[in-house]
Length: 536
Image (cartoon, helix red, strand yellow):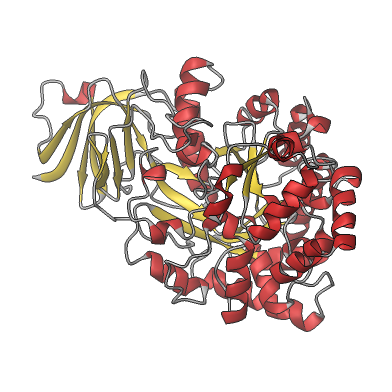
């Protein structure tokens, strides 16, 4: 007898092909048999120790979140229902050029401070690793869902060069290349960078190209948060396409949006740029989340010159009146590079989380709303938050355009990613709702994608980018990372008002053949492990 048979499921297998009805048998963590309805007629149907009646449910591969910020959440919170309940069975960590390996003691402390707004400071985490391999080994002790890791270029630069705005020396570049190679050898799937975040933004294209040459030689991919999603966004996309082609490295564009007023209706120009590159032989994919607002930290909006030297230097500049005045001018008049070259509109900046509970009254209000309540200029409110919260404040940025979101998600290179920051009292609902929102809102309600198209974008296409030979499809011999959902009711429960509500219509989720969601509830299983780069 096998472990499990999923009886009478409508199988959407991840390939993009039409659904079919079948019994799917799982044993020892893998799909061992698929008996289609026609083949089962008149034959003895498969038997197992456990049977699920899947009448009316769709069975698909588990969803792959190509852009996740669960680097500490997976270690801190074994439940991890934010992702497991969505049907996510694999997350890609190490995003936007900043994460926790490779590091030394100094760099680890600096990075923890720099991205407190993404992941918390980590007081509850035992940072008992320093290398990429050590972090992956830590994940292998047991997590809710599987995880892959990108080497964060900003962290590598902090480790070798520091947080200064200068070119790397030849010796420093050699060391960075070695660190990238070591991380890939230890199992990382590629390299990320955050080119509006310090210190990664201080790297020249020539420096990035040299690192990407290493990545390409190992069969990894480059995943940049590029230099602008606002003013100059198209030029920033073109820069990454040219850089990756020069380095002979596959390119995956992170959260590929066209935001801010300057980019309203300009998604077709981006897609034309990508189509021309693809038709010329470029290897490009991208991910998006199905929402208009973005999410980052308040400190990320600061100009790069104000962020040089690391968190303590930033705080010192903010407390100096003359320097703070320069920062304000860059933010409100010039348009800082941290705010994508666009003058900040404080009415679009909503505080979603703070590190200091005493600042909780700011959460859920825009900076302008809080400033008006206090009878002060928005900059004074923002500055107070930055200093008192020690750069740990998280924000939503309401600057997106629905027509751009829909156009980009239709593109042939598209995959899904939540960019989900789980920290804060009112996080972006994409952290809890991205994948059911694709299925419910954009497939069932709007018809932007067919169900088969959408599932392929969330499963087999990202698996192909990650070069995973046995995930992303419902196939015999493949790992049993599977989701059962009701196509009539699947929906995101998360809203901007209640962002931590779990989805509906996803009663079963399996990771490596073990239930992490069963009858709509989280089990205590921790079957997830690190998913390491497949050698060439």
